[in-house]
Amino acid sequence: MIWETIQRVKSEKRKLDVVWLDLANAYGSVPNERIQLALRMYHVPEVIQVMLDDYFSAFCMRFSTNDYTTNWINLEVGIAMECTISPILFLMAMEVILKAAEGSAGPANLGGGGSMPPLKASMDDTTVICSKEDETRRMLTCLDVLMSCPIDRLCLPQQVSQEPVKSLRRWYDSSMKDTGRGAETLELASENLLAINKCGLQGKFKI
Image (cartoon, rainbow, N blue to C red; front, side):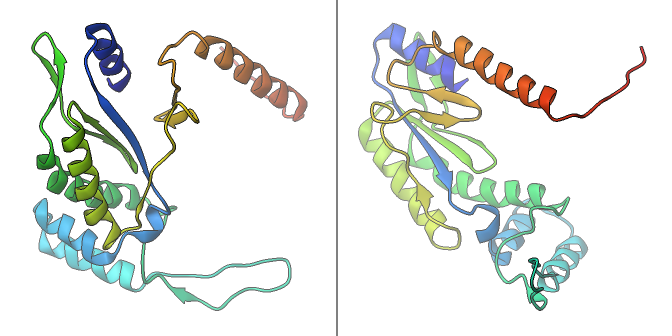
C-alpha cells in the first residue's frame, strides 16, 4: 500500500512526505505499565490483566557463556521475545501509541479523491505519510513524545537520497523505481540456494 501510494503521488506530481521509523530495542523497552494500559483500553478481563501482571513481575532469566552462568535476574523492563503472548502484548502497546498520535495529521491527499491514513505500522516498523510538511513535523514530534517517555526513542534513518531504506522487506531508494529489485531478488535467491546446497543437509520427500 505504501509503495502504491508513492507511485500514485509521483504520477499525479503531488507532494508527499514519507518517513520510515524503527524502535531501538523495541521488545526490551516496553514497560509493564504500558501493557496494563493497553489491556484496560481494549477491555481485556481483569482476571487476565492480573494474571499477566503477576506473570511478568515474576519473570526471571539468566545467561550462560562457556565459562560461567549468571544469577537469575528479574525482568524489570520489556517483554520476553520467546514468549508466545509477547507479540500480541507488544502490538497492543504500540496500538495505544498509534491511536494517541493519529490525530496529529490528516489523511494524505493522493489526488483523484484518494487518501491514505497518516500512519501505517507493522510491529515496530512505523511509516508516517503526510501531504504537508507541518503535519509531518507535528506527527513526528507527537510520536517522539509518546515513545521516548516509557519506550525507547525512535531511530530515524537517513534520507533515501543518501542511503536506501528497508521497510517491511521492501527497499526504497531515491529513484523510487522497481527496476533493480528483480536482479537483487535473483542474486539473493542464488546465494541462499548455494548456501543450502553446501550445508550438507539431506531430506526425503514423498508426494
